[in-house]
Image 1 (cartoon, rainbow, N blue to C red):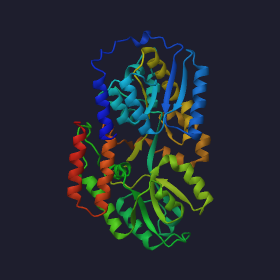
Image 2: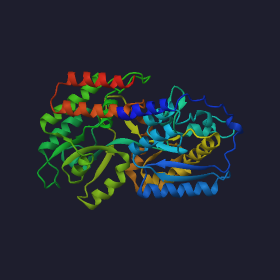
Image 3: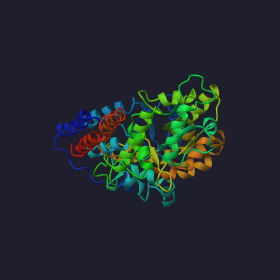
Image 4: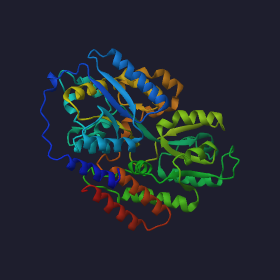
Length: 432
């Protein structure tokens, strides 16, 4: 989130004056019957339609007469701004889609509740078997200092998409597993165009200056953006430097171009001008249909190259936070989340959204979807290898700082100065 908006949260909190401590309520004794809830989300089109179908099913089937009404509240930034105003005015939805750094801000300003007591409740919580069925790393992305600030209904993986036909024309039958091979293939692609490419432009990679793209590389090199306790940034690390140096050398060689639009790499991939592009797993169905309607080449997905013993993939996505309202509404909201993340509902949500489920048990309900989307099934096997980006408050602003530093370095500015400045500014956000 930007500095201005982050400041607004604290200003609004101060404007509310002295707030009484939350009343301790025994969750086991709360009655959620008849609660009417509002759920703010960012979904549109097919995803919104399926979500509303699921909401209708929950409303008709739950024994407590709980009713959840979905409400499109704009994009993530719009939703955050509305939550800032809602926290100040004390008018909040019952449920809200949020990235972990946003949910962290809501919780810190008494706009969201800790879900851990609901998850462990004897009467309302998860069984030990159900808890084990969640991908533990997904849950951990929303847990800070023992507080479960949100619950993940889905996640995405950052994947390497590659033109398998072109790769074979370059003498390789498998995607590169190490960075040296990847770099060599990018350089080779510059001088040996794909046979179906009639444009004359040929590149190994087109990459936007984006924090998630850089994080994906850094993870595969054995690094991270923060220390293990998420108390300090590590943006001047050897792994960050190695990734940026690799990218800069490819730019100098003319094998990589910096993208200025988020979908530029995808467009160039579809026209056979780029051997690789890095993108979300949710793009698999779109690439399937677009390639089939276009050049019709064989393509596949893979983890990024890595120097670690096993691949480490960047896993990300928004979760759902339960807003601080009343004890009954909070419990009712939790009961919906619990239902929504059960394997059967997870499978139907996957089919509409293209996301990966938060529950391992969803796989048995996805066999037909796997058969229809074999690349999705291939990537499904890598979910346990996921690692998330920082979830601390202020990370949205740091993401922009990372993108600016990437652009500066790839355009030839001094790396030492750029990373020192990035590290200093990023650490400063932790104390604002």
